[in-house]
Length: 240
View 1 (cartoon, helix red, strand yellow):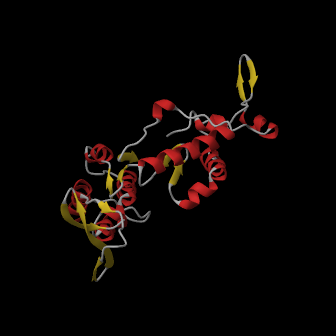
View 2 (cartoon, rainbow, N blue to C red):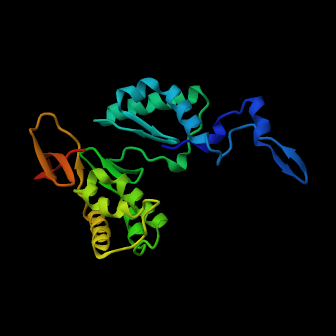
View 3 (cartoon, rainbow, N blue to C red):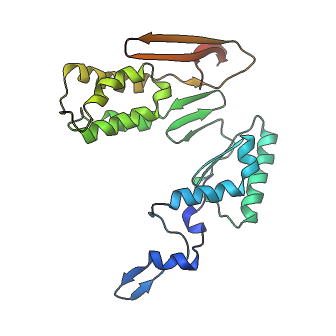
């Protein structure tokens, strides 16, 4: 679910309205509700949401990022109960929900650049496709943008720290930006890893885990794996 024009559902205190005045030839106008595009609007809105649903958030079945609301359940009956709980609380504080942005009863959904289901967490390939269309970075800003994007999905990328090491060096303020063959290979490896990134499996505490560890002269890492039945087939993969 998603709130309807979420930021506008916050009233501004009278003392703060003058700070957001708009001066036009028609006169001076003041916002009565919190507008979009001010720096602290997201954090303020997130705090407000967290105070409305503290119990539900602490129990783990409700997740909220700004105005995106995700309810998870093990069964249809539980889901309806939890949905009713959230809607009752939202109604109690006069919170409006956008029906156009609501999806109910799905086994899989897109959230914050990921594909989330009851058994796994994957990368939204549409997000990756847009980045893969970009050419090799030509300056530090473009390189930092790529590294930042890949870092968001680092839990899906094997040996990310090693791949990232040579590219991050040329983003230093004192470094000269130069795409050597080593860095071009690292760049291509990151792009390829994003397209081939495995699904991260949801932990099942009744199934044994496998721990893989590795290290070299400039990096070390570990990954927790398990074998899980997906689509009637045993599948081994990393755990999220």
